[in-house]
Length: 333
Image (cartoon, rainbow, N blue to C red; front, side, top):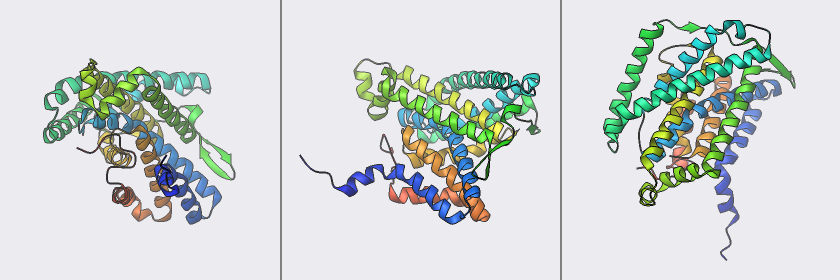
């Protein structure tokens, strides 16, 4: 039996080790435990929300070979639908009751995910389906779909920004080791981790997950075995759209303001995460999102002028190290 060298075994886990290494470097650079802890939790929360938005796109990218620039439309639609529901349930969100607050958020999340799932089904059927296998056309028509979605939002909700307050239960902060940690950011970390574990379980422990993973690696073989990969494509697209809607609601609660262009603005970070992680890889997408969130928060504290380009720099470094992304499931086409 061939013995694997130690450095080869370490290289296998190198992408995962990047997160604790980055956290340690952040601690050494910041030199203040309370500030470092606050920034780390903020970075993890931001990373988790970006992961939720990007997880569906990386599967669509890997499985369907579709470059969907319209993914941001589902983020915006999810945010607007969710916030509209929360504003309509103002009596519940403003009440000093944890149960009523959580119930209102649950209704808003279900409404946003249902709306974006339906929008995703229509988007795939009308805009994406005619351009399978044509990347340039995919970029053009999905970008057009994003612009149309933004214009529809402006028609329905108006051109002004919508400001709102989080439910009472999510306001304020808790103190830990001298650091003030916002309650909502802690909740975002928990929700993001739960979504990651749920997706990983579906992909690794269920039959539909097995078909999706096999379809990402060799779609022709899956179809030859008699599975209707087209239906799997549509299901993945709809699920990815619903996750983008969930991410939109969470980002809206994070910022406490929504605009019609918020999805388009988030697409830069979403694509950076998908490319860093590698096509079709949920684990790579998760690691990439955390790296992006932590890097942006650390750099914004240490060198604010470099914050806007920090993630581009991270992307360049990762691609110089691993041109296919950290954990690609399929080779770039």
